Length: 172
Image (cartoon, rainbow, N blue to C red; front, side):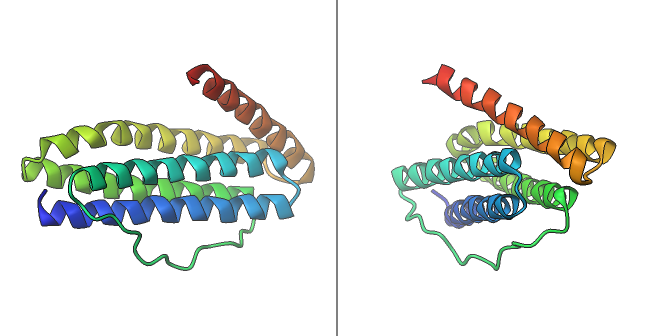
């Protein structure tokens, strides 16, 4: 494996780890603000990013790349509103999309087609994740996020998470 790709794989491992930890911070903010549906959404997101990190670890290690997590920046743990937290969520997804696309371009340019193939599901999932968060932001903007609307929004997140749990049960 090319040294540049090795380095970028380790950067992506760190990116996935940072995203997972950031979502845990968001879940904690939601817990502090009595939003259990949204809290569960961020726990699910944290676990999803952790699973991605593990997939990158396994792939890199299986292909001769010594995997490691790099330095973790200070994570944002204070938010002004549900809209603020979702906009930060979108920013994280967009940053991850850029990093995965850069890695895919590097793989293409260096003719590492095996790693490029490995990245394909992540590229698709990033598109889906961004679109999903954008839809949530639109919903929050339309409904509003004052106290009584937060109750409704949180119930919507609870339903969303119940649907994701059912999808997970079907896969097993």
